[in-house]
Length: 129
Image (cartoon, rainbow, N blue to C red; front, top):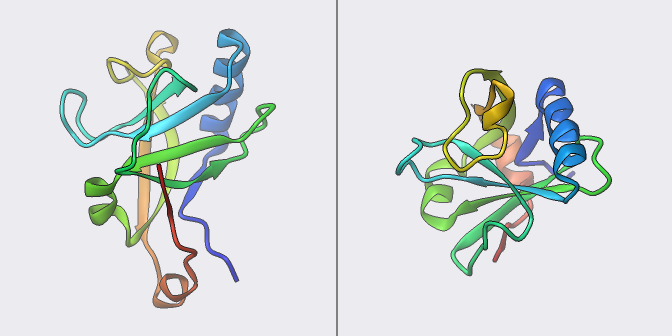
């Protein structure tokens, strides 16, 4: 049994499809570490944000875009979030400064819950950048 670390709400999936269509490029997320924009999931077109060896791939979302949307987090942030299942959702408001959903009037947010003991035992290892 393989347990996913990441999921996407229907509303966030719809926004991702819209952003993919309007930008014409594959998308990605990076969970920020709380600097300028707090701790927010930041959405970029792939190649705009460069991941490095200290970034961890949480998983790939399947929101209905032509390709999966990878979700990355820094190794330091992963230490805090490693025990949680993360769902990317949306809420009304202005997006994070560098995240591409800013002009839509919506912002990506994180909803999380702790993994159960059984889920923790079944978690697949993560991949680093």
